[in-house]
Figure 1 (cartoon, rainbow, N blue to C red):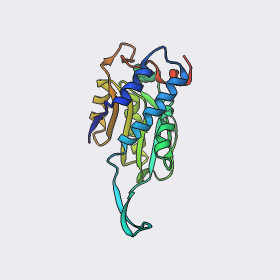
Figure 2 (tube, rainbow, N blue to C red):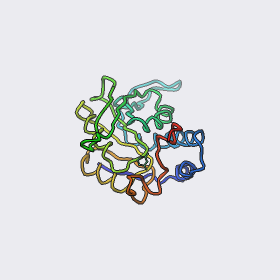
Figure 3 (cartoon, rainbow, N blue to C red):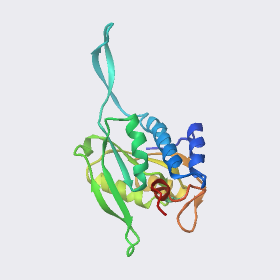
Figure 4 (tube, rainbow, N blue to C red):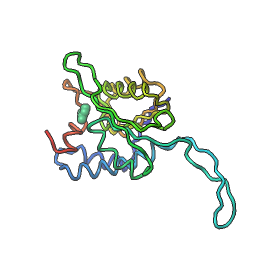
Length: 207
Ligand code: URA
Protein backbone atom coordinates (compact mmCIF):
# COMPACT_ATOMS: atom_id res chain seq x y z
CA UNK A 1 0.00 0.00 0.00
CA UNK A 2 1.18 3.53 0.43
CA UNK A 3 2.92 6.03 2.66
CA UNK A 4 1.42 9.53 2.76
CA UNK A 5 3.20 12.55 4.25
CA UNK A 6 0.50 15.14 4.91
CA UNK A 7 2.56 18.38 5.07
CA UNK A 8 -0.63 20.35 5.73
CA UNK A 9 -0.19 24.08 6.51
CA UNK A 10 -2.47 23.99 9.56
CA UNK A 11 -0.74 20.89 10.87
CA UNK A 12 2.72 22.41 10.30
CA UNK A 13 1.67 25.56 12.19
CA UNK A 14 0.25 23.61 15.14
CA UNK A 15 3.12 21.11 15.13
CA UNK A 16 5.63 23.96 15.39
CA UNK A 17 3.89 25.06 18.59
CA UNK A 18 4.18 21.49 19.89
CA UNK A 19 7.86 21.24 18.93
CA UNK A 20 8.77 24.43 20.84
CA UNK A 21 10.30 23.45 24.17
CA UNK A 22 8.68 26.48 25.80
CA UNK A 23 5.19 25.08 25.07
CA UNK A 24 3.55 23.75 28.23
CA UNK A 25 1.34 20.70 28.79
CA UNK A 26 -2.00 22.44 28.21
CA UNK A 27 -1.04 23.97 24.87
CA UNK A 28 0.78 20.79 23.80
CA UNK A 29 -2.37 18.70 24.40
CA UNK A 30 -4.66 21.22 22.77
CA UNK A 31 -2.58 21.36 19.59
CA UNK A 32 -2.27 17.56 19.49
CA UNK A 33 -6.07 17.31 19.76
CA UNK A 34 -6.51 19.75 16.90
CA UNK A 35 -3.92 18.00 14.72
CA UNK A 36 -5.54 14.63 15.47
CA UNK A 37 -8.84 15.97 14.10
CA UNK A 38 -7.13 17.14 10.90
CA UNK A 39 -5.33 13.81 10.61
CA UNK A 40 -8.58 11.87 11.14
CA UNK A 41 -10.04 13.61 8.09
CA UNK A 42 -7.00 12.69 5.96
CA UNK A 43 -6.59 9.14 7.29
CA UNK A 44 -10.21 8.23 6.53
CA UNK A 45 -10.18 9.62 2.98
CA UNK A 46 -10.00 6.28 1.16
CA UNK A 47 -12.36 4.23 3.34
CA UNK A 48 -14.76 2.09 1.30
CA UNK A 49 -18.44 3.05 1.05
CA UNK A 50 -21.58 1.15 0.09
CA UNK A 51 -24.81 2.46 -1.39
CA UNK A 52 -27.88 2.76 0.80
CA UNK A 53 -31.37 3.83 -0.17
CA UNK A 54 -32.82 6.71 1.83
CA UNK A 55 -35.59 9.25 1.40
CA UNK A 56 -34.79 12.95 1.81
CA UNK A 57 -37.64 15.38 2.60
CA UNK A 58 -37.75 15.91 -1.19
CA UNK A 59 -37.31 12.47 -2.81
CA UNK A 60 -35.73 9.00 -2.56
CA UNK A 61 -32.01 8.82 -3.26
CA UNK A 62 -29.04 6.45 -3.12
CA UNK A 63 -26.73 7.61 -0.32
CA UNK A 64 -23.45 6.30 1.10
CA UNK A 65 -22.48 4.45 4.25
CA UNK A 66 -19.09 3.25 5.49
CA UNK A 67 -18.70 -0.46 4.75
CA UNK A 68 -16.91 -1.32 8.00
CA UNK A 69 -16.88 -0.10 11.61
CA UNK A 70 -13.80 1.85 12.70
CA UNK A 71 -11.55 0.80 15.57
CA UNK A 72 -8.87 3.16 16.88
CA UNK A 73 -5.87 1.54 18.53
CA UNK A 74 -3.52 3.87 20.43
CA UNK A 75 -0.10 2.40 21.21
CA UNK A 76 0.37 3.15 24.93
CA UNK A 77 1.14 5.51 26.28
CA UNK A 78 1.73 8.43 23.87
CA UNK A 79 -0.85 7.12 21.39
CA UNK A 80 -3.56 8.09 23.89
CA UNK A 81 -2.89 11.72 22.98
CA UNK A 82 -4.38 11.20 19.50
CA UNK A 83 -7.56 9.43 20.61
CA UNK A 84 -9.75 12.40 21.60
CA UNK A 85 -9.20 14.23 18.33
CA UNK A 86 -9.93 11.13 16.25
CA UNK A 87 -13.05 10.39 18.34
CA UNK A 88 -14.33 13.93 17.81
CA UNK A 89 -14.35 13.31 14.05
CA UNK A 90 -15.37 9.62 14.31
CA UNK A 91 -17.63 9.49 17.39
CA UNK A 92 -18.83 5.94 16.61
CA UNK A 93 -15.27 4.55 16.65
CA UNK A 94 -14.54 1.81 19.15
CA UNK A 95 -11.16 1.93 20.87
CA UNK A 96 -8.71 -0.93 21.47
CA UNK A 97 -5.48 -0.48 23.42
CA UNK A 98 -2.05 -2.03 23.02
CA UNK A 99 0.92 -1.41 25.30
CA UNK A 100 4.42 -2.08 24.00
CA UNK A 101 7.61 -1.87 26.09
CA UNK A 102 11.22 -2.80 25.45
CA UNK A 103 12.35 -6.07 27.05
CA UNK A 104 15.59 -4.99 28.70
CA UNK A 105 17.19 -8.44 28.16
CA UNK A 106 16.33 -9.07 24.51
CA UNK A 107 15.99 -5.32 23.67
CA UNK A 108 12.96 -6.30 21.56
CA UNK A 109 9.56 -4.58 21.96
CA UNK A 110 7.09 -6.72 23.90
CA UNK A 111 3.36 -6.42 24.46
CA UNK A 112 2.45 -5.80 28.12
CA UNK A 113 -1.22 -4.91 27.67
CA UNK A 114 -3.88 -5.53 25.03
CA UNK A 115 -7.65 -5.19 24.96
CA UNK A 116 -9.65 -5.00 21.74
CA UNK A 117 -13.30 -4.75 20.66
CA UNK A 118 -14.69 -8.03 19.30
CA UNK A 119 -15.02 -7.11 15.62
CA UNK A 120 -11.31 -6.49 14.93
CA UNK A 121 -11.34 -8.72 11.83
CA UNK A 122 -14.28 -6.84 10.22
CA UNK A 123 -13.17 -3.32 11.07
CA UNK A 124 -11.06 -0.58 9.56
CA UNK A 125 -8.36 -0.42 12.23
CA UNK A 126 -6.49 2.86 12.70
CA UNK A 127 -3.40 2.40 14.87
CA UNK A 128 -2.18 5.72 16.29
CA UNK A 129 1.18 6.69 17.79
CA UNK A 130 2.58 10.25 17.63
CA UNK A 131 6.25 9.36 17.12
CA UNK A 132 7.51 6.83 14.56
CA UNK A 133 11.19 6.62 15.52
CA UNK A 134 12.92 3.27 14.80
CA UNK A 135 9.50 1.78 14.04
CA UNK A 136 10.24 -1.21 16.30
CA UNK A 137 7.24 -0.87 18.64
CA UNK A 138 4.81 0.07 15.88
CA UNK A 139 6.02 -2.87 13.81
CA UNK A 140 5.53 -5.34 16.68
CA UNK A 141 2.15 -3.79 17.56
CA UNK A 142 0.97 -4.20 13.94
CA UNK A 143 2.12 -7.82 13.92
CA UNK A 144 0.18 -8.54 17.14
CA UNK A 145 -2.94 -6.77 15.88
CA UNK A 146 -2.79 -8.81 12.65
CA UNK A 147 -2.40 -12.03 14.69
CA UNK A 148 -5.71 -11.17 16.37
CA UNK A 149 -7.39 -11.03 12.96
CA UNK A 150 -7.22 -7.40 11.83
CA UNK A 151 -7.11 -7.17 8.02
CA UNK A 152 -7.72 -3.54 7.10
CA UNK A 153 -5.11 -1.50 8.94
CA UNK A 154 -3.78 2.04 8.78
CA UNK A 155 -1.00 3.47 10.93
CA UNK A 156 -1.23 7.22 11.69
CA UNK A 157 1.77 9.05 13.17
CA UNK A 158 2.44 12.71 13.84
CA UNK A 159 6.22 12.83 13.29
CA UNK A 160 8.34 10.14 11.63
CA UNK A 161 12.03 9.48 11.06
CA UNK A 162 13.03 7.97 7.70
CA UNK A 163 14.20 4.83 9.57
CA UNK A 164 10.70 4.27 11.00
CA UNK A 165 9.00 4.68 7.65
CA UNK A 166 11.40 2.21 6.04
CA UNK A 167 10.76 -0.32 8.82
CA UNK A 168 6.98 -0.19 8.38
CA UNK A 169 7.14 -0.25 4.57
CA UNK A 170 9.45 -3.28 4.65
CA UNK A 171 7.62 -5.32 7.31
CA UNK A 172 4.01 -4.24 6.71
CA UNK A 173 3.61 -3.37 3.02
CA UNK A 174 -0.13 -4.05 3.35
CA UNK A 175 -0.58 -1.26 5.94
CA UNK A 176 -1.31 2.32 4.85
CA UNK A 177 1.04 4.67 6.68
CA UNK A 178 -0.04 8.28 7.17
CA UNK A 179 2.48 10.67 8.67
CA UNK A 180 1.85 14.35 9.41
CA UNK A 181 5.53 15.36 9.11
CA UNK A 182 8.74 13.65 8.04
CA UNK A 183 11.78 14.70 10.11
CA UNK A 184 15.48 14.41 9.39
CA UNK A 185 16.88 11.50 11.39
CA UNK A 186 17.25 9.72 14.72
CA UNK A 187 19.91 10.76 17.22
CA UNK A 188 22.14 8.34 19.17
CA UNK A 189 19.48 8.06 21.91
CA UNK A 190 16.74 7.14 19.43
CA UNK A 191 14.99 10.53 19.54
CA UNK A 192 13.64 12.03 16.34
CA UNK A 193 15.58 15.12 15.17
CA UNK A 194 14.37 17.86 15.31
CA UNK A 195 11.25 16.12 16.72
CA UNK A 196 9.48 17.38 19.81
CA UNK A 197 11.18 15.40 22.57
CA UNK A 198 9.43 12.59 24.44
CA UNK A 199 5.79 12.82 23.34
CA UNK A 200 4.49 10.84 26.34
CA UNK A 201 6.33 13.02 28.85
CA UNK A 202 5.19 16.24 27.22
CA UNK A 203 1.62 14.99 26.99
CA UNK A 204 1.34 13.76 30.56
CA UNK A 205 3.70 16.25 32.23
CA UNK A 206 6.16 13.55 33.33
CA UNK A 207 9.91 13.56 32.84
N1 URA B 1 9.46 8.66 21.10
C1 URA B 1 9.26 9.96 21.45
O1 URA B 1 8.37 10.28 22.25
N2 URA B 1 10.06 10.90 20.88
C2 URA B 1 11.04 10.60 20.01
O2 URA B 1 11.71 11.51 19.51
C3 URA B 1 11.22 9.24 19.66
C4 URA B 1 10.42 8.29 20.23
